[in-house]
Length: 111
Length: 114
Image (cartoon, rainbow over all chains, first blue to last red; front, side, top):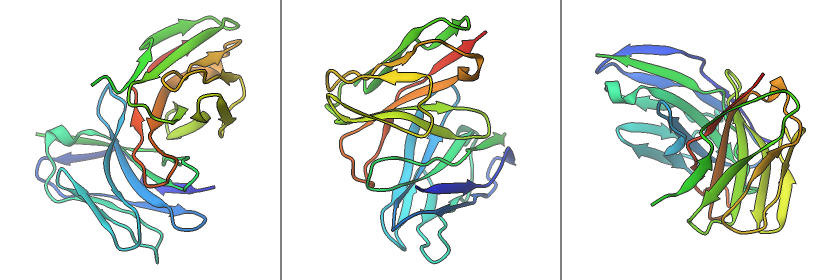
């Protein structure tokens, strides 16, 4: 099965700072790669995804590029806002539907 | 749109009690699953279903049972609760088993076993 190593948190930033959350994975074949976000008190929701090598997923100012050669899918945002405070999960998915989640990275953005 | 609905949102059980966590989706998704979320461990798959009448075990199935009699519902049963089952439980669904398919999650059930 797949496994994920995700940058440990918590991460605390000031508004407008640059955010990077590292994610590397091990997998059989070429999985699709997802970032899910969990806002306080809510379930997870899809933030972005990439389905093949060199694809870039983007949403809400966040970006991540599928790097097959380094088996990585690092999440970046150039200027964070207080509303970006959440827990972020990296998740590769094989074609058997099962998602493998990283431990999650808690991000807190201060005004 | 309701999406994935989980009930209850909070529950406290005594060791040895049984209960059922409910999960319903209104998107006509074939695939449904249960995860538990524990600090520092991400989400771990408990059981999943690829369609009505079909279920299978995930990574951490011990102590849990599931059934899938309809497309909409996928309840998770704890037969004899243990403190180790204290966790936040999430139900998820997706329309396909393909790896590029988005999963939709419920808001979670926070369970405490004392």
